[in-house]
Length: 459
Image 1 (cartoon, rainbow, N blue to C red):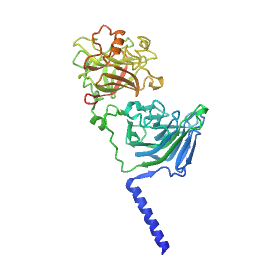
Image 2 (image 1 turned 30 degrees about the vertical axis):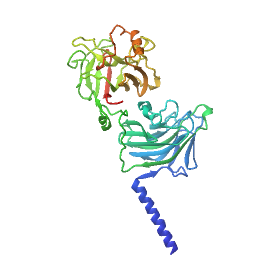
Image 3 (image 1 turned 135 degrees about the vertical axis):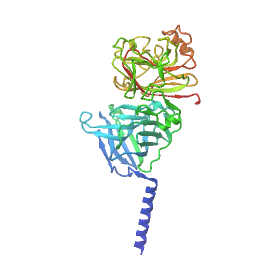
Image 4 (image 1 turned 180 degrees about the vertical axis):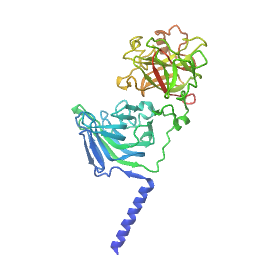
């Protein structure tokens, strides 16, 4: 009888446990005791189970090492706790990722989207990096409010939602990144130990525990308003962006909303809508416009503006804001300019002062401070962004990295204007509102994903 009672209690407990698991839908990817269900790929860093944690330890080697799930996953919510001991360390969690055994010179290459764990001074933890392929998709600088969420030397709770084309991240319940990306419908999950080349950094540890996943009954978690969304789905806004006040300045199909600068119609030549892009054609290398500049039909004063651009070799163009124009006077359009330029080929890069005519600079006024690794090559798309706050603080971004900032109308701003080609233009760049302009400088340049959000009601 006692055996029957014990068997009954055991079965009852098991059924209750299974029902609880079924009810909340979560599955543990780590049993706390073994590495069952995981395998090491690409590098030689060490992974061990210690005190209910997975502990990854760095070794001196030329490549990153990954502890990879043997199973692949499609849509899911993934949560875990992560601790990194020192600001010199680096790690990440791969999602929907893949392995090429022939990659990295035959040493094996893991590639795909990664939840970045970066305790360095740049504070990019929670950003989204495309390991082994496209580099940064969402540096955490896109969302400054999320950059202080990660705490070095203690466990941090991290969360990823990967549902359809959308990936969202949180650290300690603080939202960080939002990416819409059409690549990779399924793939494995992996824990990264970053490569180190300096022997003094060998032996550093990364700790992971409480790794769990949910793959059914998924309900996306809403982000609060005001978080930038990076999307590679052309000329489309997410429902979140629409609710947050974003609108497209280019619909991908027509020239609606754009006219020639100084005129009321779209140019009859030079500009064309083609394959979801707004393209200005080359004038045969003469630097002379083929269709002239185009401007928005509406004016803007306080805004967050984002746009993708692709240049041909030697290209010169730009996006201007706070533009003023006089009707029927071609060439009269003046405004502040986010420079679009092939810095390696076009001679303008060597003109001006201190590089203030290079890519992403405030043209002829303030140079952009940028690293070459964050500039996408000619023929590939780059993302520019201009944010004008209600207090006249202005920021330029290139591919998610802030490259300059200034105060419009300040004495410092007026001082650089006085040294520029605009020194004789009264109150240059200080108009309360103006048009957005895309420049025709006689070179083949394409634009897409041009979107804007007015910020008047935000503090």
